[in-house]
Image (cartoon, rainbow, N blue to C red):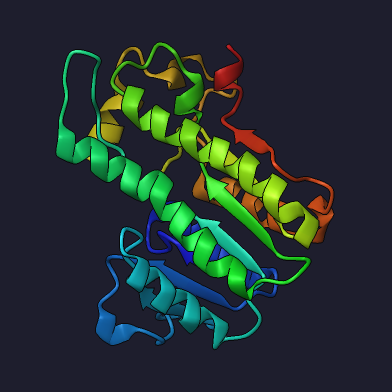
Length: 237
């Protein structure tokens, strides 16, 4: 089950997991509920489902739908939003919405999904390098949501490890996908972290999807409670 599955990174994750042999439920708020359970056009074994991660009822419905496709073995919490903010500004509605989607949404999905997961299952939360960058003032609160998500990852790994369920996160850098206006401002400004990327380019959604598939796979069977940074080296400078 992939949340935020209709975004650029989400779609790449869906395809990579399909190639790895998974049956995929792609949950996203953009999916028309009338299409629940239908296959994505041109993609065998990728099924669509309307999913609002801010609603426990919606989350539970999507999880139940996923279990009807087969054993629930993997969760990718990719749903997220970015809204720019600075220390001298405040927007209650925007801030609460970011935390509700980026942090609490992942927690709702995890709490609902683990009831159906057995030993050998794995969860990957999609974080961001923004929580490691101190010079990106307009990402302060967005970064805070991702720092909270990584803390949740570590704590869930500790709690679920004894059950044989691994929990990890991936922190992408700037990825070449369709961007919101706020993200485009961050990516293209003169102080963009991309300016100091040793590889000199954005990452691709497919590169992030490869990392996610690795963390879910048995190749990472002893990797638990960590965050894999995939940013071309930005956060190391």
